[in-house]
Length: 187
Image 1 (tube, rainbow, N blue to C red):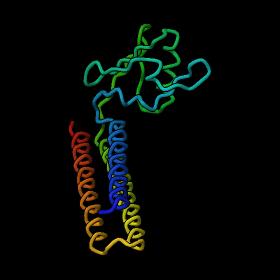
Image 2: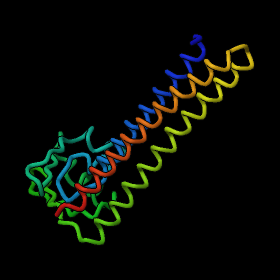
Image 3: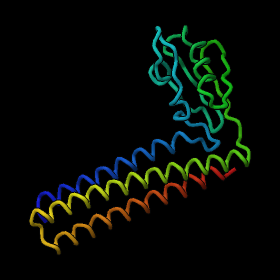
Image 4: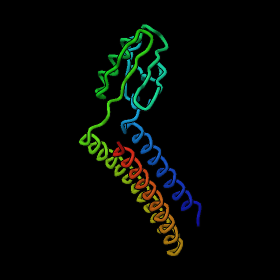
């Protein structure tokens, strides 16, 4: 294989890995009825006139499977953090005890679980689209190399290698989505 073809394959693998990393991040944001500090990753807090992610102004931790604790770095931020959690529209009700904020995670209804399952599937489809786009770009590079003198057999081998990599990543996405759906539907 020529250097250009190997570079195209490596670039495709890298893009596919980025799609998987993005999928992981997105799936962590989908709550499955258990308390997870990543649930608050979208929360922005007014901090000295600027909107700041909650993780930069407080420690967020899971006390148990149903409770999150938010410990601000500055006590003056407690009310702003409460406002940020409410404005993030996560369906959570923060409780201020003067020192920290406790958030009880309500159990999910069957209907909400189905919605979250659909959301997880949609994230999986987005990841698959990213993986397929990486495959297409790599195949386009191989076709360019073919016009620049790459042999027919080498091009077919490279395309087969890219397809095998794509299939591997797609099956990983399917496994992740199945696991997340199982997690969401478990009461």
